[in-house]
Length: 277
Image (cartoon, rainbow, N blue to C red):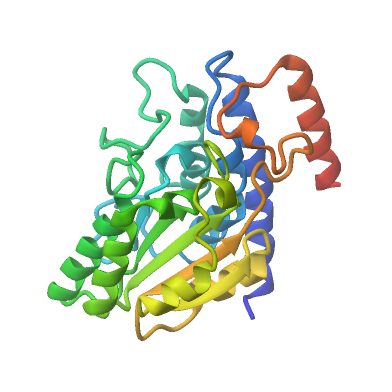
């Protein structure tokens, strides 16, 4: 069981990250942002960056850090607040989201922002990058660092994901963790209608991965999954809710990417504040 103080810390971080996502999106005006799939990942990122991640905030290139790859690059809206929670980037930078000259764009890029290992946004590429990184760490005899790759369930339609999955098993990359945000909705609609990949658990098992299925909003389950010992590559299948925390966005594919009106903003903040009571 995870430490009670760590659980509390991650739960509090989750609340702040969810509020940051709303504020950052509202501040973009009519431009909007990828809300739904960022809200579904809040607890997954909070438990990593405020819980189990191996890093040094002042040394982004520390050799023995964990490497995090956001293959699901459009969820950068959730990643940036998590980086701020960990002290990797200044919290004040969040207000520059999507503004001209900002280091925090709609997708992560290699523009000097600490904590970004790869530019991402073109789906299906991150797990291959993770395999290469995990292999490199093994060849350097780095037994401390892990590689954590975040994917979307819609992204698992890509054949490149499964090529990487086969490679990870072949090379026995026990330092690699894939986290699949299974919110059941992708850009075009529900995953079962666009490309039904069920049963996901048996697919990953057949590729030689250790599979853990969790509630992706349950902090204790997430922390346990991140801390589990491994003798092979691991995948965490996190069952989540798209748009989690905002009543009219939950399980609504229309909020994959959207803007927020002033009236909606007031309603959302009222809901979030009520949940915090």
